[in-house]
Every structure is written in structure tokens, then in C-alpha cells.
Length: 356
Image (cartoon, rainbow, N blue to C red; front, side, top):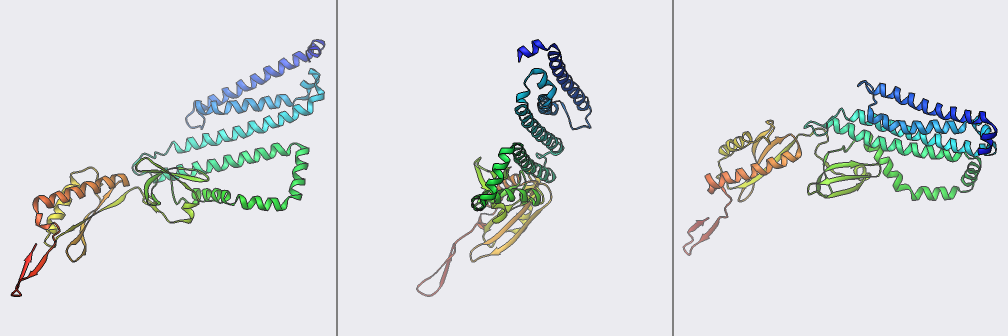
């Protein structure tokens, strides 16, 4: 090849011009993209530009390798077929990389307008869930599609593939049955993205465990349990089995505290104390403040204190506080209102003696 270049000075000029044109084209493209990046109304910023310049450069290289004039001037026309196939694979890889980078840029620009850490974050959690799952689905399909196109670009592989598909129908059926669970998980992931029975940061009770949805993939869901454990659940679980979602429609939630007291408990005083406790803490959102007698048993009455909070962790802390304060209130001011066990004895003269 070096000998050919020395014998043909014009060939060296062609190669130098081609390489310089490649770098000039890359420079102009990056310059234009950076001009767009300066305007906040466009999707691109400096970080996004750095993501797409590399696949664009690979795309230009693939196109450069495909130019037959360069092959002829280098004296390597006999390997033009190999270089064209290499160029095809490089172009397919670069376009796939560019599409994946573009999808991630779009996702980033959309979700950065929504704050999941906000108190009323239902809309943000919906967007995060949809884009996280759909991003994985689209990238997975792009990779499969790119691999298929790359393989089909070779005639020999195409013929082998056709013959295999023509003669291996039974094997395909067996493979389909073996991959049934994986396909079901992927379809469940798509269904979760569309119907959204769960969303990122939802508070759920799964398998008796209280936690938050931390991650949703195509095949499994990660639940962050309250004690920092991680519960890994297949996506099909949330389609096929019942579970509790405390933040399906909103992040605010009602908390309940049950107390069991004696029949002589003063209800009005307890209602006043509940109101006093709620007004003294920032955990209460100021919406619901109710105390009711919900049941009466043989020896006790059941009292339910109902209160509201902005989200489930806050509701938990509020319930703990109210329960502690109400019990302390009864112990200090109305000790006789605590549950008692009454025993009635008969003496020898059949007179009744009541003890507590």
C-alpha cells in the first residue's frame, strides 16, 4: 500500500483531503450543535453534545471507509467488499448509538422538569415511571433491530438463517415455551408503563413488607423496605397478584390510632386533647382530625383517632406521636379510664361483692 502511494502522488492527496474533510465536517457539526446548546429552548446542552459527537464521528468514519475512490488510490480494490461490510457494520453501530443517546437526552430533558422530592409529586412519579420503562423497551428493541440488520447484511448468514427457520419450526416452538416467562415479564413491564398500577416512589405493601418502589425494569421491580432491605419482585407480580398501593392517586394519606379504654373514659376531653396534639406538631397537614368510638366490647371500648398527613412516612410518625401522647394523657389525668378487669364474687350469704 505504501508503494502504491509513492507511485501515485495523487493518491496521497486524495487520502489527505478525505481525512481533512472528515475532521472539518466533524468540527462544523459540533460547532453547529454547540450553537444550539447555547439556546435554552433547545434540547441540547454541553453534556448532551458530548454524548452525540462520538457516534456522529463514527458515522463519518464509516462513510469515509465506504468511498471506493480511496480504495482504488490505495491499491486495495481487492478488499473493497470487506471494507464495505466493515463500513456497513460501523454505520449501523453508530446510528444505533446515536439513537440511544438521543432517547436518553430527550428523557433527561423531560423528567428534569418534574421534582420527585416534592410533597405533591404524583405527576412527577408518573412521568419518571413511564420514561424509565419506555426507555428500556425502546433501547432493547433498537439493539435487537440493529443486530438483525447487521446479520442480514451478510448474504451467507441470511441464507443460513432462512434455512434454519424453514427446517426448525419445532425448535422454535420449544424455544418459545422456554422463553414464556421472560416474554411475560417484558409484557408486564410494558403494561406497568401504560396502566401504571405502580410508579417510582410509590408506597406499597408487598408480601407483608412496607416500602417504596425504588426501580422498575422490564423484568423486575425493586422495593426499598423501611429497614433498608431491598425486595426484588418480578414485574408479573404487580399484574397477577393483589397488593396495597398507598399513593396510587395522591401522596397524602390518612393515619389511624386505635386505643382500648374503660367505659368511663371522657370522650370530649380526649377529642380536645387530640386537637391540641395535632395543632402542636408540623406532621399534621391540617385536613382531618376525628376521634370516634368504633366498637364496644365486654370489658373495653375501642376508640379510633383519625388524622391526615402529607405522605405515608409523615403519617407513620404522626400516628406514633398521637398514640404516645393520648396514652400519657390518660395515665396522667384519667387513670381510671385505663382498661380494668372486674371480678364479681359471692359470699356464703349470696351477697355480691364487686372488685376491680
